[in-house]
Amino acid sequence: MACQGLANMYLSRQTTVCIGIVLCFELGMGSVFASQPIIPGTGQKVDQAGDDFEDPAWEFTHNLPKSSSNIDKDPRYPTGASTNGRLSEGAFRGGPDIIKRIDTPAGGVPGSKGALFLASRETGIPGRVTNEMQQDDLIVEVGNVIGGYVPPDWYPNFVIRVCLPPFDKWEKRTGSHFGVRADVEGPKIKQQPYNRRFFFANQSQELENYWPGIFIQFNQKVDGYDKDHAVFVIRGNELGHDFVAGSRIDEPGWYTLGMSFTPDGRTHYFAKRGVGPLTAADHLSTQIPYNSPCRKFNAFFFNTVNNDDGKTWSTGFAVDDVSFYYTRR
Image 1 (cartoon, rainbow, N blue to C red):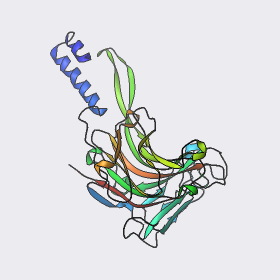
Image 2 (cartoon, one colour; image 1 turned 90 degrees about the vertical axis):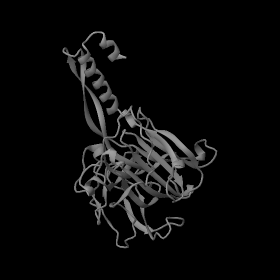
Image 3 (spheres, rainbow, N blue to C red; image 1 turned 60 degrees about the horizontal axis):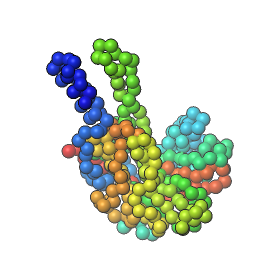
Image 4 (cartoon, rainbow, N blue to C red; image 1 turned 60 degrees about the vertical axis):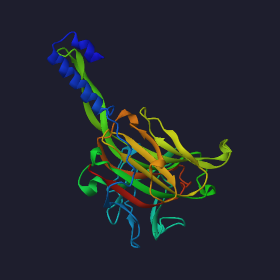
């Protein structure tokens, strides 16, 4: 509509320029040519980006004290890492207190002998108590493994399996307990000073990090629910708000979660009960989180969450067959 109005004021050449600017802006925001969701697990698997934890010698080296840069701006380098270089402590929040290979819990991926157990107690500043909900990060290296970020026109996607313990073993708290999230970058629209020549303010796009993901939230019966259960919480919609998606989780055990990214900048969320391949029927939602379309995919990571009181352990989860894929169409 703006271009139509300008057509009555300027020569056709200037109108053409205006139309081009508007179309480029809309494409940059991902509002044109929406892509169909790609099912996580599609394309070429990158063997070094992820892990199946089958190596009996698998170990993680903690370089304590861990990071709490999100609270006190202290990353406490060097960060911890697995001996095979595939997983690392988050330099922003620090890694889980327990990161260890265990025998695969019953019902896991057929033939799997090993999985990874994650749990945290001190999720805030080492040696201090915040008495607030805090979280730790365990990074699955992608960009550092392949030598750079993955563009969304390569359709980056990943799949994980996670084992939920019986509900009586969860931390006694309604709220998020576990998450799998992506480290991506998208444009932050920044207004520039008014330009007299073109009669509107110039706009430049700077990329900034954001972290879309799927959380598993526990809802306790004692807090007014009909019974103990869990739900999938998506982060997030175009306003950055979290929301519940998919069926309620009434049974513990193994679940498969995945996320994918398409050239239009959209993020696609999937989840299902069991350890089988994800399908189109497992699609939970498609969003442009924070209204910032994905332009770079860097890594993905796990969150362990608890109330940081210095004594209460987070709910313990096992993860397995952590895999990253891409496809160039």
